Picture (cartoon, rainbow, N blue to C red):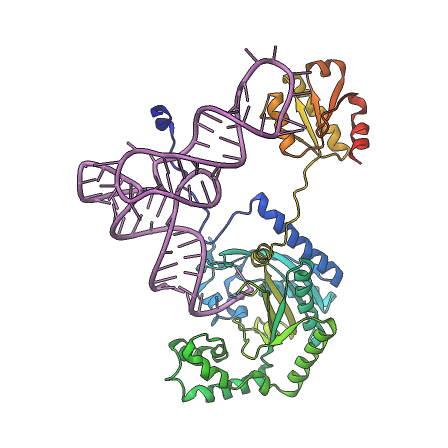
Amino acid sequence: MKSSKKSKGKKFAFQSPKGTRDLLPNDFLYFDKVEKAVKKTSSLMGFSRIETPMFEDVKLFERGTGSSTDVVKKQMFLIKGKGGENFALRPEMTPGVLRAYIESGLSHVMSPAKFFYWSPLFRYEQPQHGRYRQFYQLGFEILGADDPAFDAQIISASYGVMEELKIKNIIIKINSIGCRTCRANYVKKLKEYYKNKLNKVCRDCNKRYYDNPLRLLDCKEEKCQPIKTQAPQTLDYLCSSCKTHFKQVLEYLDEMKIPYIIEPTLVRGLDYYSRTVFEIFTEGLDFALGGGGRYDYLSETLGGPRMPAVGAACGVERIIEALKTQEISSVPKTRSKVFLIYMGDQAKKKSFEILKSLFDAGIAVNEAFSKDSLKSQLRMADKEGSQMALILGQQEVFEDVIIIRDMESGAQENVPIKKLVDEIKRRLK
RNA sequence: GUGGCCUUGGUGUAGUAGUAACACUGCAGUUUGUGGCACUGCCAUCACGGGUGCAAAUCCCGUAGGCCACCCCA
């Protein structure tokens, strides 16, 4: 007792940084399933994969995502390069994807271009349910097109992934916040409306009034609600082309029978959105699984060419949370059906040769090299649910045979090692 | 950035001041070359640091992390 206490080492002092998590083998049962769904949907709909650096010039986000947004103002991990460069770990993908598209010259080769991504992002936030400092997003971007068909296709792609995963009761909340012209017009009206009510709304709304008036519509403060509901709505102030655009998006969604509700107060938090904005929800979870919208001016804002575009991003951890909440099962672990057991050093050595030949023949084999007793190796084989065990001892090595044991019936048979591959293949089907 | 709750072995829990209990899992074994059952043994300085007490998992303070509500977002 005392000696065991004395022999204890120091407590392991490291833990994963706040808001980050390790993806352990069991997590990948879900992770891989989602990844498979996004790849399938992408290939069916013609999106090709893109990946960009995990860090970029901080200005890309300041100018692109918008310096008035929380994401840029207080949620970026900043890195100082040794040469004095200012980088930021990417808090979102869109500006990087657009940058890559222009920089690579791809914009001259394929336009419009349809991309999908599956990438980790970083935001310095207070972690919470469904919210991490490092998290994965899957997303779609269509660059160089302003046709409303693409808005619908972006939504359809996101919806398709959810559908593929069998997530229940998916609902799209959608709105249009107009183009530069009609939005400016609307914001003016909105400010006029709020002007003489500023003493009746919360402190945050007073700030929003000056910083980002559209966000007034986002307020959840109780005392602001009555004022909010009476406020002018973006949809009533759309210019005729924005109105037509939005109407067509909805019509296309109707054609695909994608369920949506128009949410007049939906505005979203990133500066670059224009016209269509949307978020994706499912039953049982209060956070959005995804969101996106059109960003027709982002390219110009970054000093690039005029390039209308639309995109969406979904939180992978959130989708997985939905799968778990809705008890949608993960992909079952694929276990190898064959388990190799050795007895003695000579057999252990020989087993490498056998393992190699089985791998070469495309047969998955499990073993337990750290357990030397036959008993514990068999126990292991049993636990793994193996269909057959291959038992190799001194005697067998000497005779150049191996025992195949059927784990269910317990029947055993000696097989010449030369014929092992064929014999296993025969039994596996 | 603000406020509230929480933190006991790999997992889930018990234990409100006298030096950690239970279940599952894991590991080792129950005589030598055969699993699934059963049995035995082992695996926690009670998140970390400090304080008060003769005595602290148990009270107090600090830190870290988790959760929740804001904020915002995926």
